[in-house]
Structure formats: structure tokens, C-alpha cells
Length: 354
Image (cartoon, rainbow, N blue to C red; front, side, top):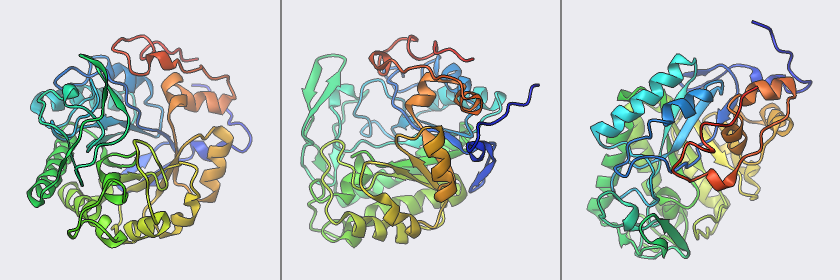
């Protein structure tokens, strides 16, 4: 096997690192990206094993967002992790990635108010902190673009049930062979909806002040950590992010409260949004994954400054052998957005390696 010489200044990308119980061969993470190729009932596509195994040279793969229940689904053709058939489908993926020498974590994503019941296998409707619809439209296979549905405000029983759903989903993920789990607390989905004042207008102990708006997230993280171990659990956040009609107030205070309340996790995954998130890094007690617009050189600089690992999204989507390309300074394939969310193998399995 020929030893590849790293490009000057990029060597740090290829050094091993430790995220909790996960020892990674390098510091490059394949960031989670929705690909909309699961079956209607949430079973990963038979293509998914090949797709993820192609990218197993990443230090860690974090999968596309995966719903922990029927009500957690808002988009069409996203996978789940709450039935035996779904877990069996994911087992083919984890086995393929491990055979290729990689590590893989499942991202659990409950969309909250972002979605439409037409996209749910069982149309149980949406739930959220408050009964406030997100502005915008959601694509459905049956009827095209539809206005976002109005969610039902979560009762105290709903809060407990959703936490239990996440615990069961995380345990099922480890049974399916995943090396770890990431909770999606970013991009305007359920956990971030509790953090933002425009989507959380509750008057109970879960709304109002930053301490109350962070309470549900902290309780959920603690419950999942107790279920699977904090050393296999990460949390993704996007401070200041406005995706999916989120408008945060007191961003720095809210996220400082959240980070100070978290126990030691395997990682905290910051999704960059343009807001100066560096002010929050010192409050995180866990290793940092930083994602958002990095290339080889800026990613290496982030590692030298503060990160334990750096996430790459579209670059990994279009370049299955991204670490090798970065090492050799080779040109990158260009992603083809028209196939990001299609139901075909085109734009999914056919990006060439060197």
C-alpha cells in the first residue's frame, strides 16, 4: 500500500482523535445529510449500505436524520429507528461500514412542527412546544408543495412520551450496530423549537426564561445518556440559526445555559450559521465537532484552534474518498443538487472515487 503524503498544513486532518468511547482514525466527519431514499415505512433503502460504505474512510459518519417515532417524521422518504424492520435495514448499513473499516453514528431527528402528515407512514400529525405552524411549505410525494401543518401543543404526557421514544430509538440504534448516537438539536427541529421564543410560547416550566426553554432538551439528553451511556452520545446545535422559521432571542444566554447544563458527552456538534458561535465554545465540556462551509485548509485551522473533529457535508456527498483527495490535493467532484432528494441511485451511488 502506497503511503500518501499529506498536503502542507493539512496533516492534522488525518490524525486520530477520540470522541467519548469512539476512537476515530482521522478527524474528518461526514456530516448528516437528508437523502430521502427510504421506503414509505421508514426502512433504509437497500442502496444505503453501499452509499455509506463508500464513505467509510471518514473518521466518523453521522447518518441522515432518522425519526424516533411516526410523529417525528415530517419529510417524505426519511428513515426511522422505531420498528424491527427499520433496525434490520440499518443493520445492513452498519455491517457494511464496519467491514470497510469505518465508524458510524445514527442521528435521531424529531422534526416537531416542520413537516406535513402526508409524509408520515401513519398520519398521526405533528407536535411541538406550542401550536404555532412554521411558515413555509413542505414537499409531499402525493400532493406536491403544501403549507406546513399546524402542530398540536405538547402536553406533559407528550413530553414524557417523546423522551421515552428517544430513549428507545437510541437503544435500538446500538442494537442495530451503530457506534454512537447524535441527537438533532439544530436546524429548527423539535429540540431547537423549545429553545426559540417564537416557537415556544409555553407558560409552564418549559417556556419563558432561558432556564425553562432549555429544560426539555436537558431532560431528554440526560435520559438518553442514561440509556446508552454519555460516551456514545452527541448533541448537534446551531446557535443563532434561523432555518425552518426559527427566531431565537437571547441566543448567547440560551446556549450558555444549555451548554453549562449538559453533562460530559462524546461530542457537541456545532452547525455554523453565521452567528459568532466561538463565544460559546468555552462553555462546552465535551469535544467539539464543527461543521459548516469548511474546506481542507479552513478545517485544519479549526482543528488547530478548538475542534476535535470537523464535519464536511456536500464535499463527502460528492466525494466518497474525500480524505484521500484532501491528502493528495486532488480535484473534487461537484455535487449535483437536482439529485439530493430524488428516489434514484443517480446522484447517490455514482460519484466516482479516484
